[in-house]
Image 1 (cartoon, rainbow, N blue to C red):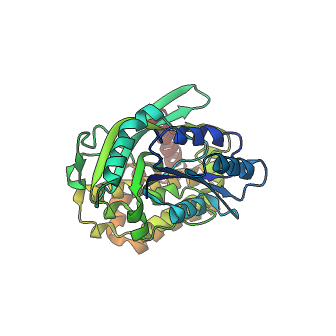
Image 2: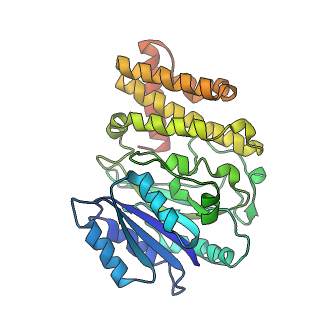
Image 3: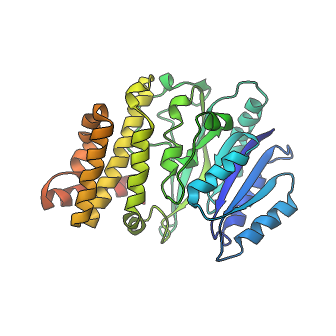
Length: 342
């Protein structure tokens, strides 16, 4: 068994996938215990399939290239998870990379845990936004939330700040945990990373956090899934993911109080995103969809509806009237400047 499987979803990624894969190969350190699964998700516009095959030919004991019909990011993650032979599983998008020095203590811990019968369920590191057009970077860490020197449980965590959430960039899961819960992401849908960092959490019993800036993430390119115009164009997919998250878990059944509070805040954030972008679209159809997603939450999770609907984020972004819409969007743009997202 390998220590870790890195799944790299690729879709017409020829321009930047080499940098990603090189950064992962650098983590081997002569141990021969990492696995890189390049999932070519139906690329047809560039040399992605050939590049993936070349990497496999050069490093046959480490790299596997899997070619499949286009199914979207979620389908590529599913394929990587199904094929993984590592004790741990990490998704690294093909336009991102991992920092070798920052990953050193994390890899050391993963190797230690991989030798045990019962390994830590979840390992967390920092991620860094590389702001493309501003030539700046923003480090997202969790030093105020997690202990930094030991394995811990959800009972040991502190409160997350409003801008802090676990993202796909920050998590390393024990592979068998994801398989045990039957995690499967929807096909042909963006924003499925929210499901990936939400649904498994109640099954996580042990956690280790490293204050290391491991994952590097470009943000701000035109056409990126978190670009504002792109998010408005794909609002139906955001709504779909939010509904899946509503259906997946009844948070009243999550026994860990601190985890339950965090997950409720995460779902509140998802509802806020839906509200903001539907109000930005500002058409009769978008208003119907906005009412629809709130009705869906109320029908499916009535016990959670009141607290989420009255969360300060959702109060401010759902104020009635045109004036209320402008106030809500103004607050959103202020939060953008403070928290450096999008």
